[in-house]
Image 1: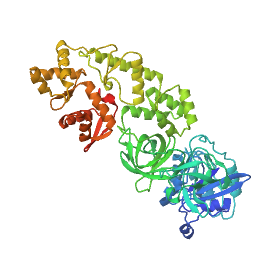
Image 2 (image 1 turned 180 degrees about the vertical axis):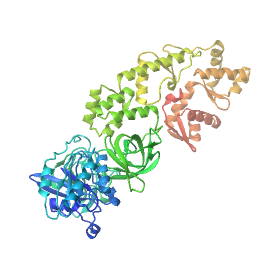
Image 3 (image 1 turned 90 degrees about the vertical axis):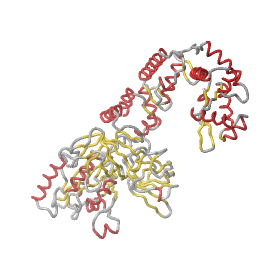
Image 4 (image 1 turned 90 degrees about the horizontal axis):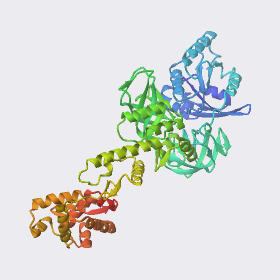
Length: 614
């Protein structure tokens, strides 16, 4: 069990740890000289066979950021209140932070009872009862102690033994450990410490540092101050890492496994506690694990949130964080003088688009109200496709956990998307209805572009619906578009006759211009151009700039030549094709316009399949 102390400055937290363990947790020269805890301190004690670790945190308001780095939801809180002082500002702020970070177990020590009168002790107890009402410490009887004389220390030890260990509910998830300290030791190399948040960590386990991306392995491991082979969630760890330099890891880093891209957008189910309202787009300090970052706070359901109220709040972070659903985040004001509030993470992403889009707000409210991953997946599937990898990463699911969850949901796996069968059927029927309506008004029987009857995203879902339409013989491919099966494009007698004439001329090398063909056949140029546009619309001809045209098969053949060349200049394509420079430029610009090739100065590159030229 790990116990995190909290309380106002000079209320005896460090002295209490010393009385319980015999360890002096103030280690920095400035701390020893000033008698003031500045940074985190750690000590361990075995009480009747049970190993207990203590995290001593600063009580001064200037060092609340260090205090935040030492608190984990898996810990037990020990709120320290001096009997001669009673409840003070940092007592209140520390209890607020403990509650915001999701701690649910704790006890209270009433210190300095040897120098406080009975009246002062009684008053302090009344203040504590008022302070803890409605919190996770409500109803907890303070244990009276005097660290200097040892009075009450044994009673506090026995009270500690009555608190059960936290359940390791996240043991099967991928590893996450927020680093609160990193240092180098001669003969060992880099050592990091922290409280394991998720997963099981073992000796020789491969690890990655977020955000530096450095990779290494666990060389040796200490859990709660003793050598160990493995660690579970809630364990206080000291990890000797091989392959990672000290400058690649530090407080605010995370040890994890596998890829850890992080995210710059985090949505909170936020509760505002400060007296002043929080306004849209306020700059705030963000505390997540041991990570401290700056962000803009975007309110999703209003322009401000009042004290004591909840809101959907999106953090636009300056730096990426390694957050997951259910993580707790604390916000402080820009001057770091005041804790504003905090909340639970309900969405992590790097998405683009409207923050307040109705569909997105509906999804976020669902995630706020239904947090169980299985129930959440079922509810999200009812709204539309779910990105499998993003959902798994956000919840920290292992491959085995994700597979079991998907199997239970009976979701269809389509590429990287999870889709409910009823939703897929709805999309199929909608696409069929749209295509039927378009075809009914399509008097020229011209092939219909895919994007006119199918949504472009997500691509795996679109492709699955299209395959169903093709397999069901509702649509058939025709060039780059789609038609009714067995539908042939009909040409008028005039169009058919002219197409035969054009074939005769365009198969020459090089093919003549439209003007030259008009002169040869003694055809009115304007009338000829009108018919050419109709033939091009029916995919029987490819019109180019500067009074030029090609047959579809010629255009395809030139596309095949471009694929063979790969990267090429106009001159290289001209030499390979045997065509004139001006015609080659018209051909290549037509390929650019169709997205088949991409031009970069004088160089062109084939970037799409040959189908783009149909």
